[in-house]
Length: 253
Image 1 (tube, rainbow, N blue to C red):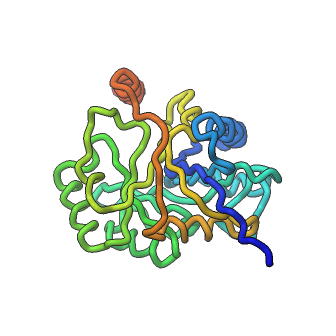
Image 2 (image 1 turned 90 degrees about the vertical axis):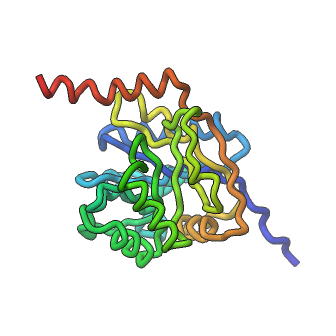
């Protein structure tokens, strides 16, 4: 009688932007090294992409990485040390950002009501996530977040490595699963944060259907997710916010 295979330790970065097709492959190779440094106990790292409107980096990578039996996953190489999962970041009619992890559909969902976007992600067997962002859960959008969470127990929350430690998020303390990710900003050098902030879990990622297995594990309430990595320091947070706004100032001149 053969013994069941022991589960592997998996490190997941659940909020990955690849801002440039030309540098995407080198960014993923660097991410594999970052996973090994930040989560050395993990045998496999996972980059869950969340592509914004107008981006198609995952499709660009399909001809360059090792394909699986799924439309929404790719292995970096035959070592299977790094998995790339497709996904989208969609802005609702109310101005709320919604992530669709494992969501490879190209349906035109931008500026649709948030509830419709979440329903479409569920219908595709993907995971809808509401990601934290600076000032993005305040006021009317904050009330919408609370309403969506109250209506949908399967809706998840997202933390990111750009949040400063002093910025507490009460919603994260509720009985709701929080998926952590790096959320690299569209700034030079930010892709180096991929893989450095996320969570660990134990499970199996079959070679041909790894995304399906991962999504099942993330839906399983018994699965234990252990965060790893550091939140942004106050200095890094302020520096990044200034750098983000400099192009806007230059354009306004």
